[in-house]
Image 1 (cartoon, rainbow, N blue to C red):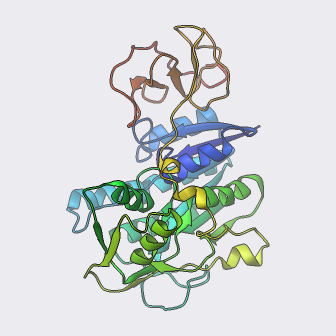
Image 2: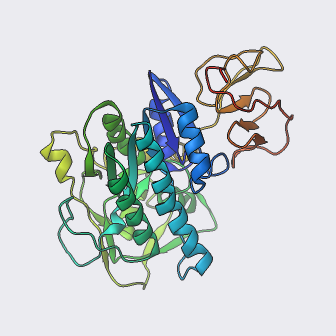
Image 3: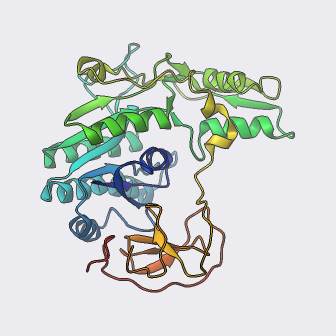
Length: 356
């Protein structure tokens, strides 16, 4: 059974991957920033060597605000570049495969034709530059890596799709102003997760672009299509907002085509994504037969009264959303968990199989 470490597990791609891989023949390790800080080189190395995953998927990313202060500039490079470096060098030390999720923003707006993997990059802006720095670290330090660039990922959690649908559902909102001068390809998180799974299971390496078919659009056009597919065109009027210079970052899946890998389906062909219920992060659904039941957060499907039997890197107690991290030695609550709950027992130094 392959061990898969999903870094940035609470984000769009992390959640989509967990949904896809959860019931399959994989042993999942899920971490986010509150559980393991990827900018901490020692913590990353310790986790990597303790659990020895076969594949590491880096979905983590830090988006600085416009006109970011120096502290945000440092944080962007710390997470997007140094974090990727820490994962790369630790993964290389145990010969694990690293799948790095990157962005269309590494290209400038100097073209009006889709960018393929052989085009020169020209990152503009802090986020783009720091993500590209992460790509370079991966290439320099790894022998078994896949870099996947995508764009406008939607479908799980708080994203543009969710924003438009929430506005349409709000009786107090009648109009929404959006830019009409930025152009890219919307990509379903579920479809992109399917591409990632291919690279988990197969020995293909290098840089790949992965966006949905169906053509490019602007944000304004995307919003109108969301409303049309959701049957809510009459609920919200979308208007043009004056804004920034034109931005073009349309990606071409050339390497997927050349190597015969199935491309993501059309972004207009995934109607389940337009249902607002599908945009919410997954919640645990469990039933109790005992007040003190534990299981790993990777949901192996088994509960036990002795947490040592199924000790994972992160444990969840049955009667609470509270989690225990073996990395930090602390109990914590995920961002969407209710406050309160019982305290837990400490299980430092245990791996998922219960051995020290």
